[in-house]
Length: 67
Image 1: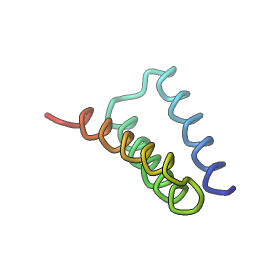
Image 2: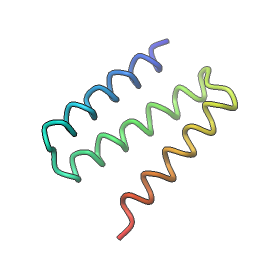
Image 3: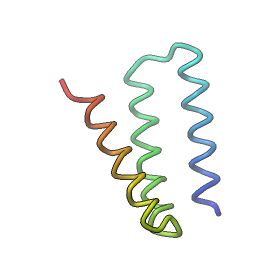
Image 4: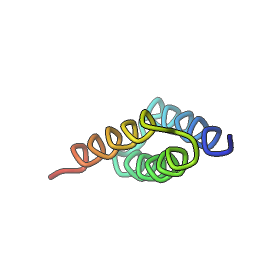
């Protein structure tokens, strides 16, 4: 439960930063932190859907950060 709560709180921070026009680097840092939290959640109780969600998030982050 703590993992899912951390993910929801991180998502709220990311949305707030986006609304405020945060710099891309700041958003990417938050997304990286989200990835770590999502990995913890997937290991704890995410099951197959959790694993896929983490993989999708990792791919999206890699694409956004690619030069």
